[in-house]
Length: 485
Image (cartoon, rainbow, N blue to C red; front, top):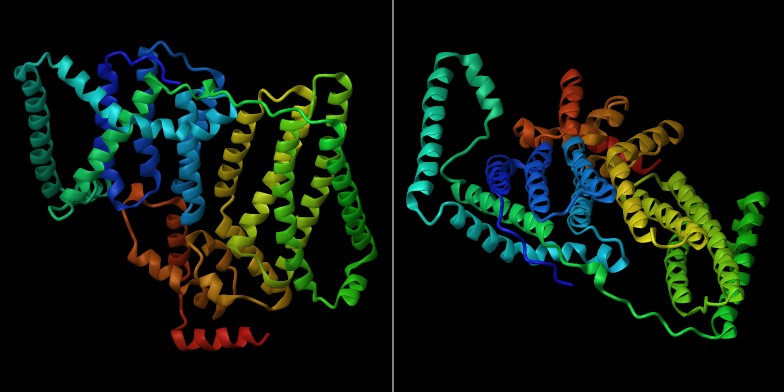
């Protein structure tokens, strides 16, 4: 599993690591937005130089993982909401690990991030050895570099201060470009510097000497007899057929007769079904995995039976996915859209895509399946973030209010600045009541350009064009009126 030890670190890699550390120290202390992407770029460049020195050449999938990881970091730069940004950052780290390792198998896809963690200490010692070797053990060489950096910093500080004091416009430009720093946050800045250097060295070390996760061999399962594995799945298919037949009957026969027989309300019927169908989809994927492990596939007859039984199960599961999405749509019509409801629908749709990919693998082979499933997950997270979930939630709930007069004011207040353009469509005093908390957060959390998302900046422009008007007492009355509708 361990690869060859890495060669001596290149000067280009060291400079990239230093740039990552310095940018981390200067930019990451005020929040996460475009600065995260700015910091990631020199780290990626350092990893590229390290891989090139080790004789590794970028392949199409490696470039796809790298570009995808950097693209995911656009989500914090564009969206104010923290939850899609968190998913995007985690997914970017996962894609970065795939780019560094070049994994192709399921163990490589799942275990890749642990390889980067394993390089935290080894990467630091590797970088120190390379720095010491390149200075030749001589303090003179290292001292000349330190003196050059110190003189440059002094010149920039002195002349920058003089020019700033000489021209107020230049001072404003300089203040917008440079991060605010004080003696009090010095330890925090130094910690960010260290984290940036250690992280960049770990990525470069992994690129130079990745762990060979693809060499892990998973022992195949013992093939079972046809009756032993096929009979339970055939019975399960019959159960799926019966359930899907009822769903189609309800769809074409209307919900009124079903609700009358069950005694459930429209929303209760929808809520009761979605979660069970989501769990059923997940369990079906597990059933398919174990069936593929145990089903015999050496003889042509066995392969045909596997494709027929599992293919039928996959098709029937797609109908279950569609039914689950329809149930949630009914629930949203009754109670509105929330972050949880939007998230689980997105997961259900992605599970449906995974089932389609499994069906395709049954026809064209499964060698490509691990990487395509990982790519589909990353693409889903990227699309989820770029579509602005909080904006979609606000837009749907505003439309629901215009159609029905129902609106969850308390929930709307907890949304991020991404929801401001949609909530701005509301009429007064509801508009000001919905935007009060968001506007306060924007006033309190105003930061530099590199730590401000596009969603925050756009929300400030909207609120500046139409200032809020109503007070707390008016909003309390509005909230009470909405509760009784």
